Amino acid sequence: MNIALILSGGTGRRAGTDIPKQYVEVCGKPVLSYSIETLSAHGGIDAIQIVADPRWHERIRGWLGTADTGMKFRGFSLPGETRQLSVLQGLEDIRKYAGEWDRVLIHDGARPMLTAEMATACLTAAEGHGGVLPVLPMKDTVYGSRDGRRVTQLLNRGEIYGGQAPEVFRLGPYYEANLRLLPDRILEISGSAEPAVLAGMDIVMIPGDEGNFKITTGGDLDRFREMVYRGKKGARRLGCVPEGMAESGGEG
Image (cartoon, rainbow, N blue to C red; front, top):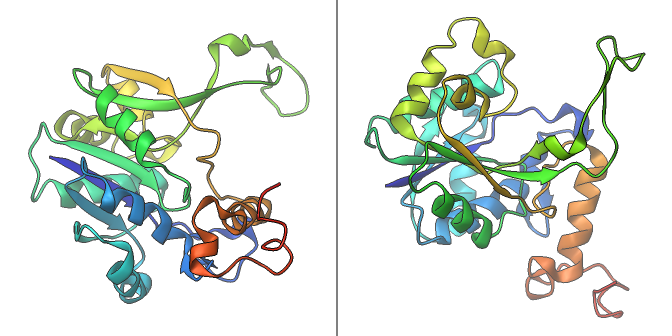
């Protein structure tokens, strides 16, 4: 059994929006719905668990009516104080209906450009391993700094990668890896794969997708809007291509 755990509890302050960025509507539907649609329609996903603030549950249930085409939604989990505590909350609820050796696919609700191909690649690569992490190689020269003002370390960019989502893990071992970090160390975790790596789980990397970016800033949201309007997510079919762009064919 493969369960998708979608994290949608963030406040999105850096995006400069009045509401959390995952709930901002683009082309007539919230950012969150794009990844729900992809995962719900995916043949390898059996269930979907969503971490979200209770104030948004009713709205999300309404969106699920059109986004959850595979009818895979199993329930909500409450967000934690940090991203990783939100993950742990989701794992606690998933364990009520899934087995220790089932797999959990963790995805950000603010990464709307997830493709079925990437989800498949992650699930396939996880076979025989404790988990899988899609990554992107570093293109720029990278430096280390202990105080944020002076260069204190030269780093080999060939050995440094940027992690993406979704990440896939065996439910039981990954859950135990998170429990070992309670109560304090888990507060320092910033990436879902960190508890697995610290626990010595076998985590493999696969090539990520530059288009599968996370919406963090207002610029990211603008970039996503432009991609949608240019037809990369069926904007013409939905009739929401801005005037002028449709006339030019929507590509450029």
